[in-house]
Image 1 (cartoon, one colour):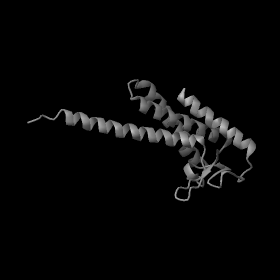
Image 2 (cartoon, helix red, strand yellow):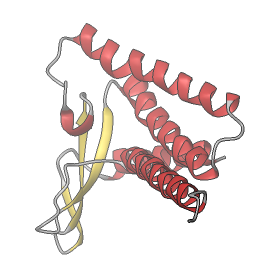
Image 3 (spheres, helix red, strand yellow):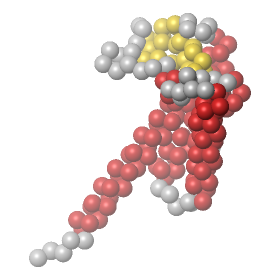
Image 4 (cartoon, helix red, strand yellow):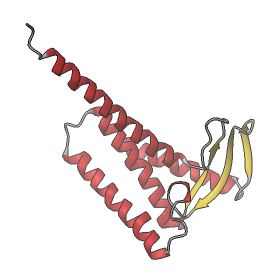
Length: 162
């Protein structure tokens, strides 16, 4: 369900962006701090790899991610006892990944349209699939930190007292 929700929100937002925003048009949402600017990204994050030869770009940005997403789905379904936070994080990663891969296969590029500029914090142009991927990474990092904290507490509780 989480994968489907992430994928659905991403694809609906991209359909709206494709129909409503002209390429490179800037629409201010919050005083030039949050804007909509549609670009078609043939590369990966922040257009990395967009200048690679087509064959290499297809291997690196389509085939390999499909393999990784397939492994992620297999891992999720074959390990039923994963912590809930890890399950949710993996679902966010997979949902966002599928959204961007779908664009790359169907349109030849990924539609990006969100931009934030809060002076100290400025982003490149991104989409909701990217938000899902970053949320998934954040949840997995949080799970790792919580697991380490729990391990440390268990180790401290098992130390012999003198």
